[in-house]
Length: 237
Length: 115
Image (cartoon, rainbow over all chains, first blue to last red):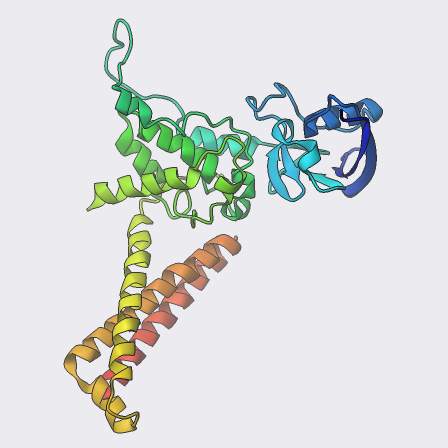
């Protein structure tokens, strides 16, 4: 049986109302035997210091709220085993986005890019009485694409997104873009490809695969980006 | 001026293909060059210039240099795009890069056809 244990943290703290500069705070937390995940530890920690800010919601890797930089690598606190981490566990906000407070970042730019790829089905035919059917093979193509929870772990680990968050769509947005390009029910393929045919929006991706490395849902944005490029090549030649 | 996000510059694909195509050609040329250079009867100026005086080899070499310069253009342009934010400075750097690379291409042709 696992007994009570203490875990050491180094946590990025920044309250713009109080602090001139961000700093790393050393904190030690006593964990109960039932505390398995990093998020459990953070919840304990907040019980001790309620000024500590982070986002969380579903606590089971579905909502994507508690994405943060854990010991230098982006991930979800609710899916990370606290015992698997080297101590002191260094927690920082997702890199590259403006910090609102402590581990909370401003995701406006991230969602702006997501919205820019029209993340919805475009079909101008009259709505059928029941549903728009797909064959099992057509549906299969969407696997590995629709599961994205928009936690931003991938985009904020991508140097191209750090340098050009206003212009480069980023891995999360491009994965979503391919999700609709690959959907046989969508009729906006040409406009979608036109929107992405841009040296910044798509071609800033140099396939370094940081996105694949960090995705907590084990998705592969690099492969999706490759397929978008493939579609563009087929369209052009 | 209103600062809008404008998307879809309608280029990028050709450069992306060109970067890969030139890389493949450079790899092939390196192999051809290595084989030709290693099978020279002797490593002397005469043998060396003899290798480069053939029409086909001139053509292949010039194509190699063009590949290097085009590949370099895309790579350097990417650097400017990533790290240089003011549009005016970036445009100037783009132009300087193009002028230099076009100049180098002319220079390479002059050197090759002098032999």
